[in-house]
Image 1 (cartoon, helix red, strand yellow):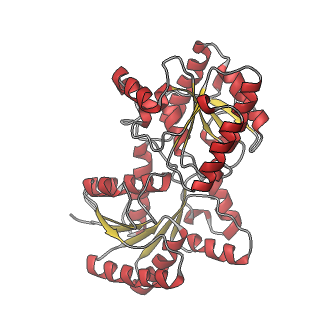
Image 2 (spheres, rainbow, N blue to C red):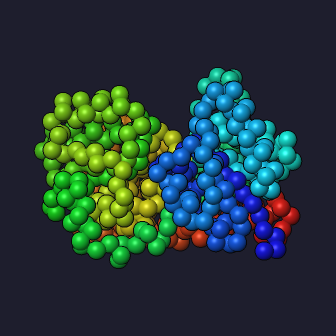
Length: 388
């Protein structure tokens, strides 16, 4: 193929997560467009999907922050780049980005990063460590909000910071494709009844995702006599001590019958279909893909006022009530979250369904997978001097 590009994406692990899914989506798009796609990581359950897409996975200890291991990784990346004639190396996390930066400089190839999250800037060492993400030829931002943060932190010209929004797969997240049998199977798996109203918080069980705040809000609702809901926290546990803390608080508030931790759920489309509301109340996030997926499935969302909350969902006061796709709450304030949940759960079904329909129309007009993949391919072609 003329103008064939070889891209090596590097990421710590290929487990479930927004960065990992984006990596997979780009790998698939490269192969589909006739290019060569390599992904290097420590491995994980998504490696099978990478290889099924026709990309090549290379196992390396890329999650390590040990300087010696990072240096060895850079040497191996140099060997891979030369052996496979890689044109572009694309890093999606800070530790592997340091290895990629050295490899790109030694071999003279193009270097791309994707800035996925609002990294903490506490202290000079942390700022220096984070800064590797801004030392690429192109620093892809996953949201408009994040682009402004990158520009203010590093003073980069805006033409070096293309915005490529995270996206959902409309074929996978299609409400009409979810059968009653899938819903019944998922209810049985999680242990919920048809009459239960699901308050969904999808994502890894980690402190920055704010599961603790939802548990506190659920406790407030229970104290008010509102118990027609079940909170479902769908995601893998990142730290067992935090999970133990959540379990203790759940029991202390008498919420054992109102809380479920099913781990990773393979049929997320069905889970969104069961949900009355889906939450993204993280402390910080680049652009929460789960909020896109929920809205695509016709589910109203509650988002926090930090980061891209007002970007990913249409909420008051920025949007009038008749245009809103969700509610926005102050970060880390369970009483405010309880108020929003109580309001939304108290709506008649036609009102909730109308908001869900607006949500689906909103994300399907702006956050499609096709836009994401075309955006990355355009960046790669531009760096190779090809017409985008």
